[in-house]
Figure 1 (tube, rainbow, N blue to C red):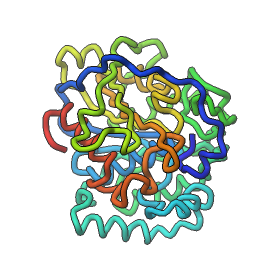
Figure 2: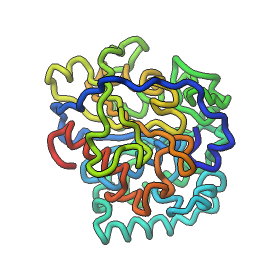
Figure 3: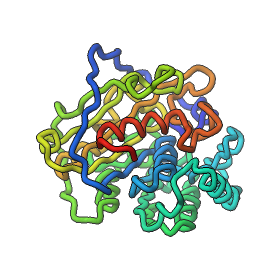
Length: 337
């Protein structure tokens, strides 16, 4: 999984696939605690999480960024996205701030005041060969500009991966099967604990209830075209902890997989093994896992759009994928974020 189409073509595609489900249900409405919406992602999913956060910062109050790059870094140009990944020292941060200011002026994103004091968790492995570890500094610089509260973890010898403490490949090796590595570090917990202010219960590894991981119909959230037009799957995942299913007030977290990590590529491996479910079950956090798919020529590795393959306003409230995920969150919460 890489965050860029060009680089992704250099990596072997995942060979495990999940056959189409026959009866994905409709996404439910839940008792979501006001102010509890956060998001995270790895690689292209990290950038998508950043985009979703910046676009909806009045409602999304924190973000976890694993092996990502700053918001707007590609400037809608695939060539520029290479610099974002490989040469972070070449990124002119003023260009990103200008992009944000323009979008703010024209109401393409929520006012940047919404980023003030939001929690931002950054993880980047020192051995990452896909996205230069120096990119973490650019992400930090970006959020510091808007007075967010940033925590950066960049001292683990991890490759390009979602770090766990109980599953995956060797921490410092590129694991193209799932891009999940066992680093003796529970990234999903550490991120969640930071975003939610500390005090979360730490999982031991066996708390997830797999029957609480549900498939839902993503096509419901596309009013004109089908999901595939925007490189999204017909089916998404949502994990609803036992207490949340019984009406207890719960938090909501949106988790974006990276390239080659979606349902069609590797089934539910990312949702089940990235570390989110155990944290969710113990701490009453509903996890929404939107799903992207590959698309010939424009997105063959199933990445989220962070360089403009869906439309030129991909990183705004007019972006196809952002609109769809917002509709999902709106339905789950019962109000428009």
